[in-house]
Length: 503
Ligand SMILES: [Zn+2]
Image (cartoon, rainbow, N blue to C red):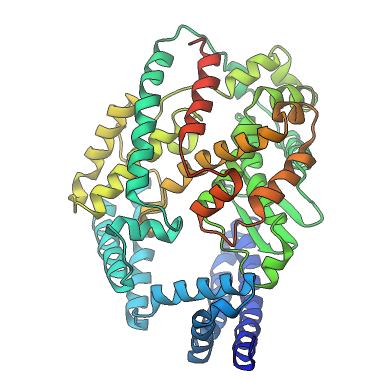
């Protein structure tokens, strides 16, 4: 590395180090705000957070910094393997925003903010018309930003997908979701007609918060969450926050009449946290720990929530502990009944409450609508009807209100292209689980409580290069194969075919 490159690299990393001090403080404040901060503290906290965030923002927006970062990008071939990833990432971000003037930036953020508030009010009133105008504006500015980015993609929607899952395209998704429909719809019909009775009564028995808290701790310990470098508390909508290298926090929500909700959200967010806790420390040192995509992250959280948490081996393993902590629930319910109850297939209206089998359809519906919104310029006022029609077509249920239909998710108030990452996560993990199976009998590892072995395998194969490779390269690197939904569909067919006695 020559002197000039060294100088520029030092400028970039020193600046990022300083900016990260501000961002670190913002993260801690944000976590506090969403968990234990009293309602009236929010305004002052928001002010402090905006001030600190802006300090960091100014550092990385300075001409000096951008010039140095662009220099790194041009000379990335001479950088080490971590710094070249950083150079590419900074360049990508710069390309995205360089033609956006501060005035436009301000105008966009007002539109997103208003859309969020309008969405909240519209959802509360269950009236889409309150959100309609704002949503139209969001579409307008999303298209404007894509035009300003000047990236070369086949379709506008591809450019949007890039923001969430780099390299993903409509072509790949059309084929992927087409296969899902072909294979899952006939099976869903069979499941609906099946005479199989699944008991659910014990799932809504009252469980005090204190008992659920014990269960959450037990589950996190079991899957090897490191409490010396992490913490858990409660919030309204569970999330994980990777605040710093040794500070990865999760949240959950305890419902007294739905103990399973917290159990599975803990496994889900715990999965996200394990990804953070096992990210190589050197990635933090080189500021690339945030390069992993949403699809990669969801693959891990859903691995722990569904592939482990909703497996027979896992339910058998934790059943005695469940009986000990929730004696009233399991007094007359067996492990087999518990397993079936957490895997019941029930086509329903709300995505976040969907079962593992019908989940993909909730994503397909949103994906098809997003393409219509972005590529076909569909009338925004038609969305509630189009939404309802698609639910009826795929799942046989029709929302009778905007609240349980088109207004249920917050995502569109912030833009388009996010949803497919949820489905991709399921497909990625199905592929790498099959790779893991070449070495281990996973059910045996689960039954034996050998989660350290599972975590080691994930660290070595799944986490290690996630920040350095693009999603398509990453999945090929782990499995030796190109991305395919086949493994996931095979898994669903086998699992739910067995539960519902179909062959
Ligand atoms: Zn998640």
